[in-house]
Length: 212
Image 1 (cartoon, one colour):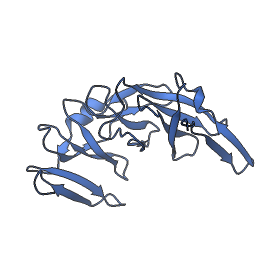
Image 2 (spheres, rainbow, N blue to C red):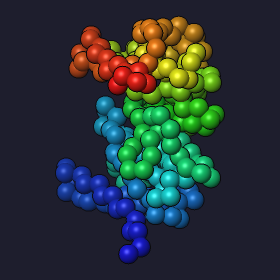
Image 3 (cartoon, rainbow, N blue to C red):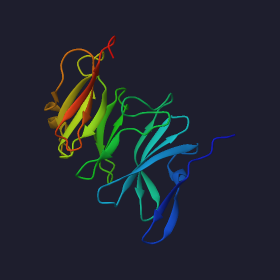
Image 4 (cartoon, rainbow, N blue to C red):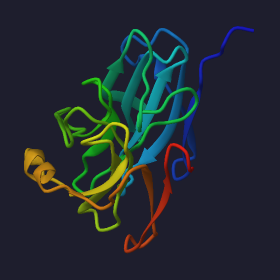
């Protein structure tokens, strides 16, 4: 049977109403799409959806207005082959994304050919790269203090994967924060971090090419 479009409904318990979120209103979304989310901002006034076409060539990060059940694009990614990569994900799962304490949305994109961390002001659409260079970033975690990133990176050697920490940058100051990044692990192999709920402890899953 032909693939059917995803349908998303928004229910307001206070008003006892249910509305259909019209994903077809996204620009150039004439194909069958699937949506993940919503991921709500802490104040409950906005949420974001990770929307993709079934052929995985287009991705929209769409801001959902809970009052009207309408969506507005804050980030568009398109690729003639496929959308994917570390933290970007593909084929049935959402990418890594979340809200910063100042209300910006963070996400990952391979728009440069490498998967990097970005933040976008959802009101203006202004986005900036938080990491950059000929390497990949993955396993991104914003610590509970809202001031510190923890992430895996292949910086310096694409055959190795280390864990790094970096301060959260104010808008327009990403380069300063990136210059203060610090590597936490050493040696060869792949290190994958898992952060405790209070953000005070990090455990690592470690393996090498011949010793997983």
